[in-house]
Image 1 (cartoon, one colour):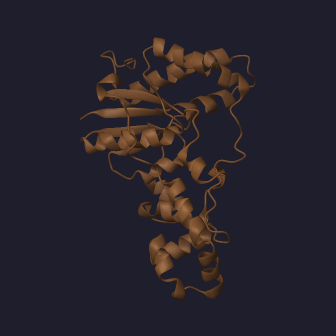
Image 2 (cartoon, one colour):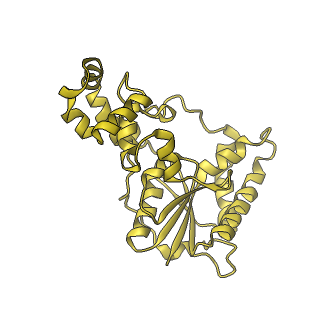
Image 3 (cartoon, one colour):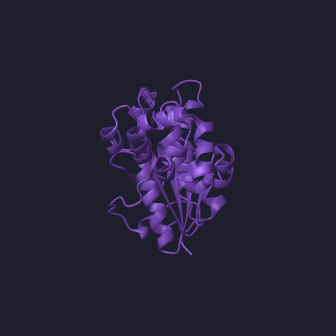
Length: 259
């Protein structure tokens, strides 16, 4: 069975850069990132591996909702100016990269989904918990810094809902990290309780007459924001990609990604 290791490039390199005390060693990030790639390959033994980078085009989510990811800290200038060098160094070291047009998340979700549809498996290396909505048993997620998996069971326990309700939960409670609004006045506890009773966002709105007047008023007022939030948090799994799995094959010595 083919197993594809998919590395969330900026998620990894920004965390590495943040761990530095200053920008004096930014040039060394390429080697650190390459070393991390080789470590991940040796640990997980994938047949294929690729690192996916965010692009500079405005994302469809930003076009849909102007405040999406508003106030997020920009990439440090020293890191941004060295990204092309880092990517070039990785390519020279045999690490295959894909540049997304905008957000890497949808490209990663598409790659993982295509693999499992082809009877393969995917391991996503990222600390972004949004990937837990990809609930296929052959898709897993790995936190390189904690050296541990991010499991659906842990996410279920934290949110208090089932994995099939993750998107509905965020549509109600919002996601402050990405400035996804959710329904004003409906916090995590209320979202959890509503979903335990009515199971889905659609059922909640279909049963609005059975919900307490105060909460029902909030839900009615925030109905359009709930729909918007549902779209914003949902990963796209059908992004057109001009790539072939053979491009990502790991070399025979199992230490490098093929370029």
